[in-house]
Image (tube, rainbow, N blue to C red):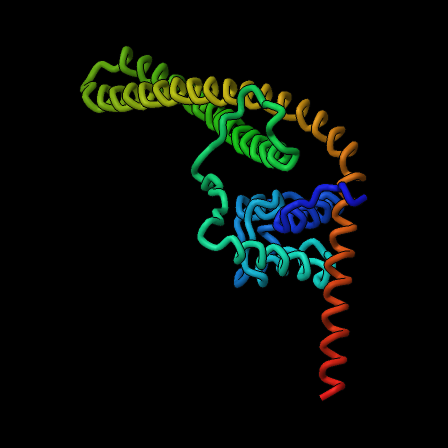
Length: 264
């Protein structure tokens, strides 16, 4: 056991929170939405925390723990160690910058270097895009059929007016004006139908692409899930020992403090 590696404190904190998120089967976006508005982290910031890349303020970490229904005292011990590690490194410590909501990651060819958490976040993002595009597809379809029906009605009115115009013996100015107006309306509806056809084509192409990306991500998630299961027990042993050591040191410090105060 003495040869077991010692993970950085922020990774131990992240791993503990990540395990809680898996146990609760909750996504990064769901965690973010359930956080108190006064103690809020974006889903990307939560992802960085769970990957052991960042150490936010304690109140923010405890709010994540509240959402995940975890042990606040246990997490506070881990946070204290991570914060102390961060302070010891001082100016040399740099937390990695996560992409903003407006930025995207390359999603083609999912490599083994992506972590399970990153793949789960990517899966969630792809599913959200698929949902939005399906909503766009449905709305475009509905408008497309409405435009077709409306244009059919306009064409019917044009045919009736043309018959009336042919039978009219007197002033045809009013009928010709109505006919011109209907012809203009038919042209507008035809243009809109063509635009909707192009929109549907784009959306369907996007859905096909997203479906392919989703398949790639799901395959890699399955691979990473197996890898995670194989290493989780060993990692838990390492982290468990480190937590036990930290708890023992804290208890020893408290015992010495009590002895000191008792001897005064």
